[in-house]
Image 1 (spheres, rainbow, N blue to C red):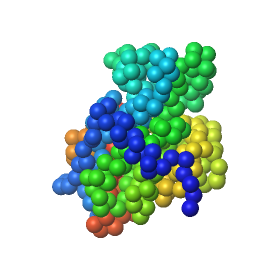
Image 2 (cartoon, rainbow, N blue to C red):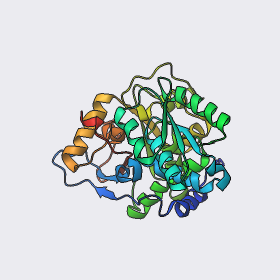
Image 3 (cartoon, rainbow, N blue to C red):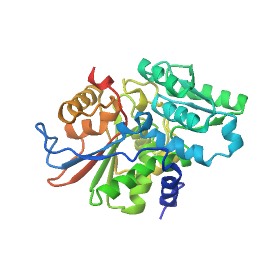
Image 4 (cartoon, rainbow, N blue to C red):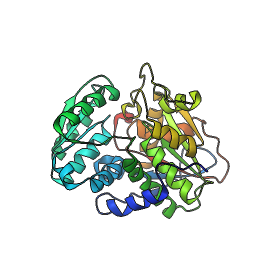
Length: 316
C-alpha cells in the first residue's frame, strides 16, 4: 500500500486546530428541482458560505496554527488567483500580522478589492499565477516572511481535507464526491480524508478545458507545464501543479473530467436559478460536469458536489 505524504490523522488534527477559526458549512439536499441534473440524488457542500468566501480559509488557518510565533510575527506572504490570497489575508488578520499577496493580472477586479477589508497588501505581478508565485517566493526570501503555498503544502492540504470529514458526518452513505481542481490542494486533501475513512467512495475532479493542468499530468505520467491558459476561471488556472498533488491525486482521485467556460457559466446560472446559490465560475465546475454528462451516474447514486467559493462572475 502506498504511503501518502498527508494522512487521515493529519486531516483529523487540522479539525481541532481550525475549530472556531472557520465555519462548518451546510450540506444542502438539492431536491426538489424543476430542472434536475440526472438520475442521481444531489447534495451540495456550500463552501461558498465559508469565511472569506471559499474553502481556502481551512488550509490557511491550519497553516497559521502550526507556524512558530516568531515566524508569524515576521508576516505572511503568498501568491494566489484570488481565493487563497484572501484566506492568507484572513490568517494575517487573525494573527494580527501583515500579509502580502501577489496576484496575477488576470485576477478579477472584485477579488482584488476584497483584500482591503482584511488589511492585506496586494502586489500585481505577471499574467498568470505561476508568474505571481515567482514574485512571492522572491519577496518572502528577501523579507523573511512566512510563505504559504496555495496547494503544495501538506499542512494546507490537510486543512482543506476537513470539509470532506464534514461531508461524511452529514452524509455517511455518500457514493461520489465531485470537486473542481486548480493546483490540486483541495482534491488532495479531500482524497486523503475520503480514502482514510471509506476508500470505496468515488472522488471525481473537474478542470477547465483551458487549464487541464492535472488532467494532462496524469495522462503524461509526470508533471506538465501548460503552454498557455485559456479560461476565465482564473482560480483553476495554474500552468503547473506540484509533485505532492500529482501523487496524492493519482492515488485518490478516480478520474479528472474537463468542462468549458460556457458549461461552467450555465451551471452557475443553474445554481442561482434553482437554489439561490451564488457561485463563481470555477465553483460551478462540478455541477457543470454533471449537467454535461461527463460523469456517468446511476439511479439513486448519492452525489455530493463541493461548491468551492462564492461569486457572481459566473452569472454575467
